[in-house]
Length: 508
Image (cartoon, rainbow, N blue to C red):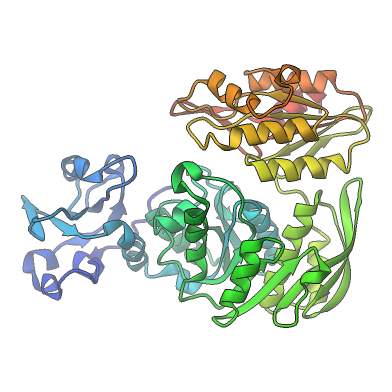
């Protein structure tokens, strides 16, 4: 994203409150004006404030000289023991700050005039469903007359316009986030729907974002390569709902953690749960509940019970998990004060989110292909179960597992695919720096009959193979890539679009 250095800010106005007040009286510091902020020494320009943070892989203090050479007029760096508070490198102050990572968001918010306070911020967290819910919610808000923007897995931007996809993180770094929000304010955006990943919450990237509503979708195994345990993973998600700016929370009552948190936070702010089970409609909580769900060829219908009345809904989305996503959106819109009639009218206009149970083909004697981002054991299981309800022939699953990520989920996903699909083709999916043969071996280790599992490392060839051998009544699930238009090999992002490949093979 292009930098948004439209004005200058005095360095002393940005210094963390944890620093002694006497620093504000330093004449040499008082004269320094900041043009922009940077966490990357390679992106520093004249007049920038450089943050030399210590991360899990890199130590930004190694690049202070590079940043100063590039034009940084001041540096904040993670403090080491027995260092003076300020070290001068010529005219450039290097200020040592303890726990700097935790303060970047607040400094960036101050630099950009606290943009989140001028927006209606909705934060979503959970293992699955964040992207679908964020796009469905932004779509609904636009239809209801509120100019909305999205920040998340598929990029960032005003809903309905091309997204900036330059950031490959679900939640960007804290400076990028505040710059985006500042841009949205300037572009007269009213509401922002933002995915808050567990990494981002744990790393304080959204610490200074004033969320008004928080949504929890679910918690299943993912990112154990980073969090190590389920308890740590849940604790990171929990941070969103501890934020003092929150006015309401939306929780999935069909998830044990969601049910627990709904009751935990109901005394802190307004809480609305959502569920597919009438038995979870309890008296001490507001609940949006689906009853009498019926699935059909390209969607579902249901009877809806909410704190704001009852209604029937027809929606063109596949799978029980999309019923859950729709309920989450309805609960959020209800908390925002919209009438049930307006909400239902909006929901019935929903269409598939790109890369989320996205349907291609299925007509003119062609097999139906479903592209989905399912890349965890639970997500793969739910996707296969959802596709099975719409499959009259064989169910073919094409999937792989990412390299240099949680190895423990690989055999689990192999076992799930073997159990729920009629035919499985294991292939590559963002192998990064890992040997793809080892990844496949890990997947096959979970299969009861690995000799019956086809292996085709070339993902393009695997997709061709699946489609070419499928019959008209068969359904092919391409799991793992979803919206991604690249393959990560080493540290390179190489162009790769499953949608384009499928359309090419089906001659659409």
